[in-house]
Length: 159
Ligand code: SF4
Ligand code: SF4
Image (tube, helix red, strand yellow):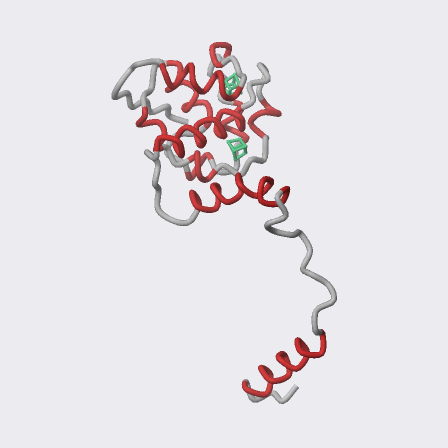
């Protein structure tokens, strides 16, 4: 796997911010690439896990917040399980995602950012009772049955 490093602005601020948010020590990464080899989406991403860490070590700036793995990571934790230094890379991704949303700098194509925002808000909404896991019981079941019957009739099945 070829490591492509793009460096635009070397401040090191992002490195520090990610380490603090994710509670990880990225300095111990020695680029064995076990994380990237096991990552199920590494082949479809511009920068696999080990490369993202290397870019952070080299002082990547906000351009790293536009990397697509932030939005395509499955959260499967394979990278974490394979790392000989126990680097919690999914936490690194969460930190990058959170910083990207805070700064409003990452807006890739598709619904992934919206989905991620809603997913992050889900526990709060659940706690406040704004959404329920199960649908409400005690509704007019007869009415629902009639709606299904009518829909079937409209489609010409008559069932
Ligand atoms: S958690 Fe994300 S980065 Fe890590 S292996 Fe899974 S998909 Fe890849
Ligand atoms: S597996 Fe761990 S040490 Fe190896 S490249 Fe990935 S993060 Fe770095």
